[in-house]
Length: 165
Image 1: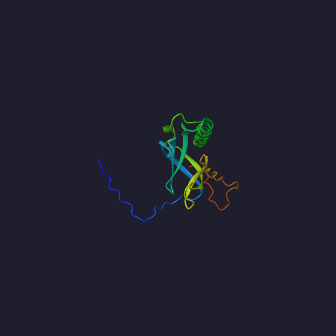
Image 2: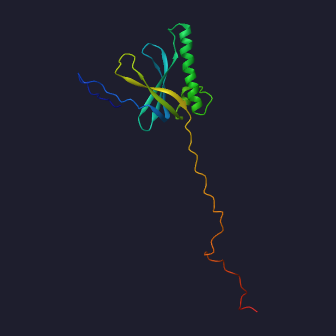
Image 3: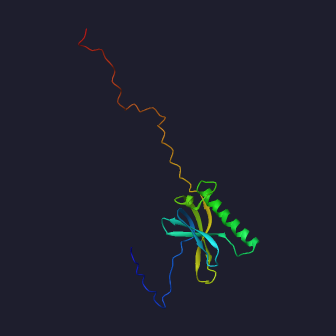
C-alpha cells in the first residue's frame, strides 16, 4: 500500500485552474461514475478525455428524490436526453448500463458558463455531441489516358531462330 503525502495548502495563495478553450474536440469516454451532487442528488459524472487539453466532465442529474415531482421528471428527462445524444454520437441507439459508454470516441462542442457563486470563474460546458467524421481517403490516381510517347523503347520483335533449319 502506498501512502500519499499531499502538500498543505498555502494561505493567501489562490487555487488556479485552466479552462479548456471553447471549440470542437475529439474525445474518448474514460470514466463514468455515480456520484452525489452537493445538493444531495444522484448524478452520473461522465469524463471525456481530449488529446490536447486534458479532461472535460458532464454531470447528469439522474436522481432527484427531494425535489417536487414536476422538477424531478424534467431534470431526469433532460439527463436521459443527453445520454441518448451521447449514445447516438457513439453509433448506438442507447446504453443499457454506464459501463457500456467506456472507450467510445465522439466529438463534443465545448462552450463556457459562469460559476454560480463566483463571477470571476467560468466552467467548461458541453453544448453538443456528434460522431467523429472520418476524413475520406483521397481517390486513387487514374492512369493517364494518353498513349505512351514515341520516344519509349519499342518492344522486341520475335524473330525466327537462325540456328534451326
